[in-house]
Amino acid sequence: MKFSKHPLHTKEDMVAASYFPPWFSIAPMMDCTDNHYRTVARLMSKHAWLWTEMIAAETIVYQEHNLDRFLAYSPDQHPIVLQIGGNNLENLAKATRLANAYGYDEINLNCGCPSPKVAGHGCFGASLMLNPKFVGEAMSVIAANCDVPVSVKCRIGVDDHDSYKELCDFIYTVASQSPTRHFVIHSRKAMLNGISPADNRRIPPLKYEYFFGLLRDFPDLRLTINGGITHIDEVNNALRLGAHGVMIGRACYRNPWSVLGHVDSAVYGVPGTGLSRRQILERYQVYADSVLEKGGPNKPTLRTLVKPLLAFFFAEPGNGLWKRKADAAMQKCTTMKSLFEETLDALPDSVLDALPSEVSPPGEDIFAGVHDLLPPPYNSIEEIILCV
Image (tube, rainbow, N blue to C red; front, top):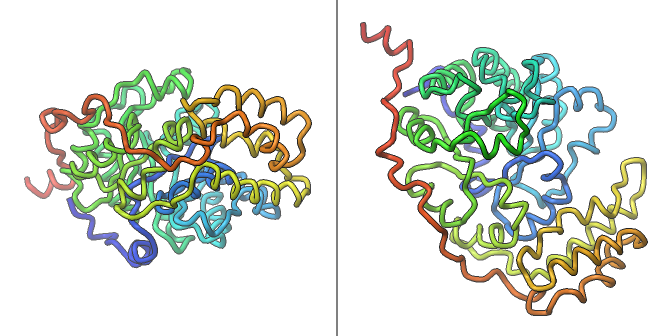
């Protein structure tokens, strides 16, 4: 399905020339993918695409004189995507214009968050999928106010609006009415009936066949798959089956070493950072203590800076003891250096000095038989009219 009205343009070409493609991305996660987590993630992978937490357009607009708190990041974090949320065109335009100065590599509109605080009462997030014409207009406004590619992250449906045709209508409308050529598809629908965001990641069934149907029916678009993928081999399987990119969220946060430590070599086919856990901690300590030394009204707590490390030793000997000692040390330590001096003896040298081990085989093939489940091909209303 072609979208000649808004062809691919030089924004995509510019980014593609600078970095590897977004074959692997870390999902935006509220209260997780902040500057501190992204610093740790970049020390494990040089090429994974990083995403910010979702930032409301209104926050950017109302904090115009305090933007570094929300938008600043280290140049080492490139390639990095800013995700914004909102449903007011004027605020989306101004927020994008303000954020454009920070040099993000892509700007994404959140059309998938099911949180009642975001999607409730028709605000934004997943509820925007019920108004594709507005999303098309919003994406045109965002694209007109930035110098980089734009994208949409969405679910496969919302509540009872969960048919493949309704998903295709959404994609077709947004792509035909805006320059949007990249869609990140979370392969579960959103349920806005009051269940929690955590249950929204678990209860609605995964329908990978919808994603692969989109690949078939929208060959001119770039499509990234998200949802239920936790293993590097699953990433490569999705790419082999035609996905243009794969996004992983919770697994990158709950067990970052076993996932991010393999991205560069296993997905991109290039050497990794070559850093052991100890070397990563040494570099992160320099970063964390420099942040603490700056002070100011936005100075984070030591606990906030330790948070991205709490799963760093997942399932390793000494992990539980280290977390207990770290919790106690945060009561009195004022620097990351002093906290490490008090706690790292809980971990064996074999854990601290090891490089990422071989990728363990995954369990069942989560994409097995997916092409036997594909929905019937999609025909847009315009195409039907042209064929009559």
